[in-house]
Length: 479
Image (cartoon, rainbow, N blue to C red; front, side, top):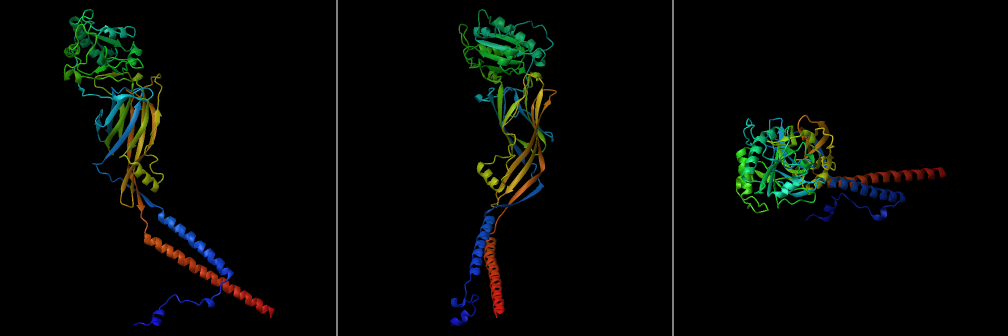
């Protein structure tokens, strides 16, 4: 067996007997300073270990052609009817999608931006509307001219009132006029208003009866509305609930539609029943908007190239008075990319406190124009989008899209619109979280303790020897 004395011979830390050591006041003070220094440096090293370290680099966007950019939005337009509001997307590659409805929802709103009902249903309306023969001018006047003075009286006298809100300058109104008057004349002959009283066809010139058309939220010409006596209950603002007709506009179709409307109603009846005559008439109608405004919310997916998201009044068979179009709007939210959960965003902000500040730069912004200046104002927003990727130490990848926004009001040479011109950057920011090594932390702590202890020992030795030398010199002078 190895003797104990041989084991003791490899002791690197040999002990000095306590009675051979000497304590000093300077040594005690230096020891206290050394201990405080160790604690301070240890705290600094611990803080550095617990803090998050990142490295940032700018690289070329690595997105492929199959990657699409999602745009989420919630926009309120208090002066644009949901009846004609359209969301369109186009880009520099030739993409041109009109009136997107699959991922977009619309709600009628009042002037206070409050939703007044359920989701507005655009309905399966045909894009091509059939008209009658334009060349035939021998049609006479078959419909009843309505104005603000006789409108309510006529609507209460007949079970069904079908009204053509038109403008004399409108191309589509002039195309409808011959067929409308012919159909009205035929219906008047079949159902005499004085004897039958169930249905009558009327017309309103919106250039003369501006207030009457505005009260029924007429924004496109011609607008055909169906008023049913008994079911047309006025709301607190005095507005009717009614339906809009979007079917074909030839004489035969109009007469057939009127007959289907009047068929369920008995001659002696005073109330208009709901139309249950078949799907042909139903597909040509949709509920008319209760208010003049519209809230549009949803999302679209676009290619990662410069493009435009446009909100406009659009119809293939209606005309619009550009001088009366007001594209004022309030943006509740507008963002790019997938929605980030609050927890993920909190984790990102812990890494980079400044990130996410421009994720929704347009939120809460209002762009209002004076409806009385008739300036054909288009509101344009120019957005530059930058992608940021954050790579966590756990190899979790989080994507965030931030953007700058510059807006302006410009004169529109045609129908005013709200345009969001977006331009994705070809570069992206890559932020990587650098993991901290625990072994490196332990090594630094040992280095702190050993270094401070060694330096303090050297200083103590220098101080002690200096004091001894000074004492010797003083003793030599005394002798």
